[in-house]
Amino acid sequence: MSLFQQWAFIVKEALDKSFLVAKFFCGVHVANTYLCSTALVQGPSMLPTFSLTNELVLLERISARNGKAGTGDVVILQSPENPRKFVTKRIIGMEGDKITYIMDPKNSDSTETVIVPKGHVWVQGDNIYNSYDSRNFGPVPYGLLQGKVFWRIWPTSAFGSIGRRPETVDPALKVLEQANQS
Image (cartoon, rainbow, N blue to C red):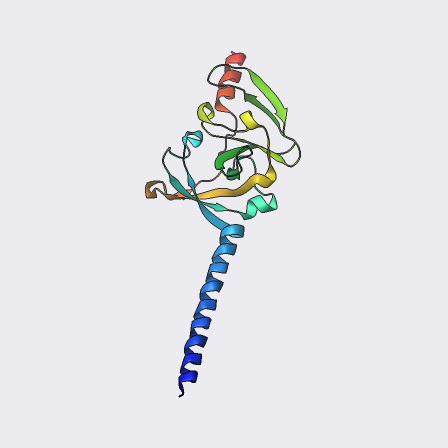
């Protein structure tokens, strides 16, 4: 075997391996962009569903792309006010829904009612007393949804499914309604 044939063999093997690695990373990119990815959730707005410290979750992107995310789902969305920031919130209302919410639950009981416009969703944090959400920036375009959170990976003590919250009524509003009925 000549020196040229040896080098040709080595180059062919290197190219074959390089293409295999490139195909792998293309597959990872496609899966991360269009199917499923991970995200870190932090901050007080989603207490008690998520803790204050970093929690690693899985989100599936198919529901958000196909319009299948619905009321009660926890979603990751691009902030409507800062495109570099991603936030975790729960969908409270879909387009056409009539939402009544307490404007400033820390300081007053005054409520406001809005109808979610077409192509938008109403999102709120589970901790209404410490959440910057649709009550502040209004309905969010559906296109800003990045994916639906479905599984908690870290911490391992909380490993498992997230699921939907069956009660999607603002708890402070529920207390207000009960007080008005008395």
